[in-house]
Image (cartoon, rainbow, N blue to C red; front, side):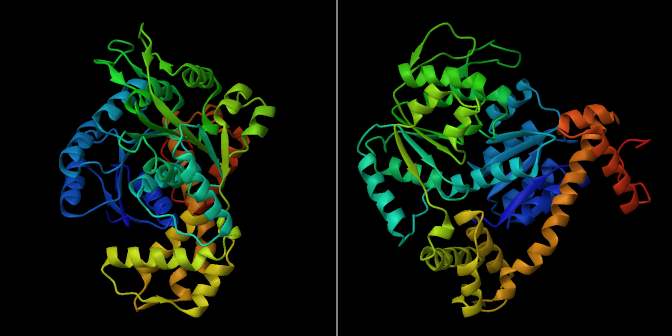
Length: 437
């Protein structure tokens, strides 16, 4: 599937543009639509790596839109974003085929994490490419681990390929004929995570018109990946510990235990032992998960892999874009090799994808990498997203600065200062959603 375009569907002009800026800053191209019917027509005519949609739209709401997507585009990932989020709406969106669900207001990092996780899952069969001795040793260990049912905890920075390694183990395991079910503990709202993990019975809460299996039941006789386990709330950690100990789950609203035969692989970019010491992660759950730990090295410690990965990404994205790009200029390749890659392999992949899109010749040049331009505009893009979140939160709180500050986790003084700044930047006042701001 062509990873380049992401389709954004939202009737709010400011939110569409804020999402477009965020997605562009991550290295993807964005197509825009302001309603469901026109978006469906785009989906019929083009391939998209994922769809981001609002729930409340005129003409066709998000639920019906998701159902139509499933009819015409199969398993394309759908991320639902809405300011009208409740457990009932979230359950309905998931039942209709949504892949993930975010509630406004959300930070740029949360959005980034959700998008990258969904994109990575669509490329789950990507080959692990390396000449790095440490990573080669890890792959050799993974081959041995695949033959057992031992619980594995994979750690490493964001973008190092933790889920990719989990799927590497799965494909070589005796459970490869069973399901592989990934749960993104960071992307699913806290009030929805328990029902997603363990399921619910009919009538368990308003909107539960029929029972639903949770991720553990769906992973029966296969592998469940608990992605970003360090983000799981403490309230749910105790229930997860019981499942890991007894391999029995209980649906929300249920009265009978259900046995599950699953192998568990967990990933995190956090230092879980540090989280245990600060009280944010249960010590008993940590030791239950940390049976066999694997730490993936960051890309900056794998310099020999940067040219290999760059060429692999170049070949794939050139093919998808219908271009005949033969390689990199020496200057461009030296820049790639000297960069620190804070976003690791995922960042490198996004940079090459963008460079292929921009390239007008048969060689990727320094200018195609756009690092200098990126550094100049990155602050501005993040500032636009921040402004959008503040103004939308004020709109939803009907101008209540104290409530908006509480929701956003900032001081009232910060809100006032930001509004004063926005008035100077936009003296015509058209950006303010609530009178009197």
